[in-house]
Length: 121
Image (tube, rainbow, N blue to C red; front, side):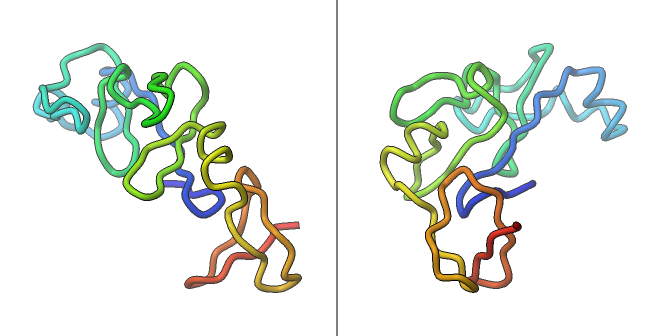
């Protein structure tokens, strides 16, 4: 999982054929959706936050928009899964650069070392 800012992770949209070729298994039909708990037998599925989701089940906790419709990233914090807009609205910036002590915007890429964050620039 690729992490951006402090709480953002990319999700991957896979079709069933690509899933099988990448993971060399027929376990696709045994996957359960982390959102609804039902088995995933759709043509497409999402892999986010180390779990599998129906495309319609991975939604923003605030605006309830399916995240696959509005981008390819999601933010998690305080037990919520959020779109970028709601994350910034609720939590503002993601922290402070350990080196220069300036604020790091929530959407900016950062480098993390243990609990410290740094600008990549």
